[in-house]
Image 1 (cartoon, rainbow, N blue to C red):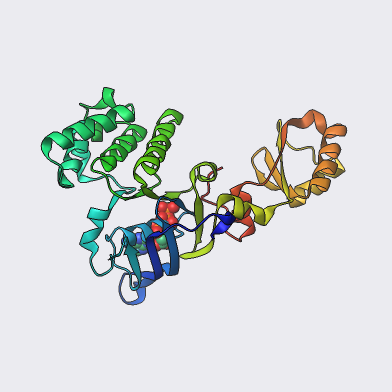
Image 2 (image 1 turned 180 degrees about the horizontal axis):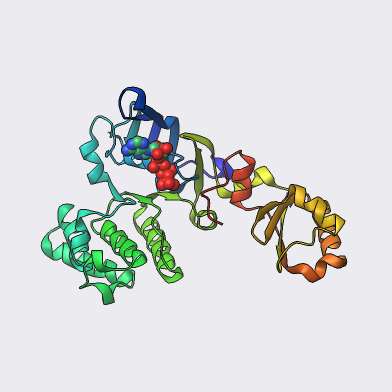
Length: 329
Ligand SMILES: Nc1ncnc2c1ncn2[C@@H]1O[C@H](COP(=O)(O)OP(=O)(O)OP(=O)(O)O)[C@@H](O)[C@H]1O
């Protein structure tokens, strides 16, 4: 049994001891960046598995190693029984990859990019065209079908590239921050499309994200990556259990916090401050006392809003010792 008592599915992707150090410059200018250092991971078939971590943690490097685009210095990558380090060319047949950068398809129209991906994956012209049309309808992209991808807005471009990745079904989808820049309607369309493929075809999804809220809602399991290592791997619920019993108190001041109020001055020393917002992670009892202190006296007039919340995945991440910057709220 796996985390949360669920049966562990058959592996789709197994990574062992993956390591990569980038070297740049020469002589005195030379520098080394260890992008990953001994990563072990197993992603089960049909899982929606997330890689969460701050900027520069090594997520994209890991993804590029999995997709056969970057050769690791050491370690193995097995996808559905294929050794991707030895045979990187096999990755294209096993997975659909949505990277962070734009692709050669950017010069094509949305419809042609989707159709071309289908053709590159071995579909007949008629089949590729039909599948592309279906995916465009599914994602609400029909009005943009005839427009070149390069001329679209950032969110539209991302959705068009995602559409292309879906044409010509692949058992594994590797999506590097797929919803960046998308509005809520487009985001919902992406997650509905992912869910449908998992339900209907058993598709496995490996997702890189900064967005902890998204991570909490869509992922079955998540690996937290920091400085090239996996520092935790569990269900979102399992990770949040690390901070079970704590609560988060957010205070938003109208302008300046009233530091002349002793309770507020004491709070200032331990709160995480971001502009007018102060955040404190504490026990429920202490949170109640703090709320009473800031809402019962002179501080109330200076308070714009306050919320008490149960711990989020971000709180769990912080507890694990990850660095705060780079994770979206
Ligand atoms: N081609 C490269 N040459 C040199 N260093 C690199 C190269 N690619 C990545 N790095 C470095 O490796 C580390 C990991 O980068 P990576 O892009 O994998 O992080 P990430 O977790 O995907 O970050 P982000 O969330 O910002 O996309 C960083 O320190 C980065 O600067």
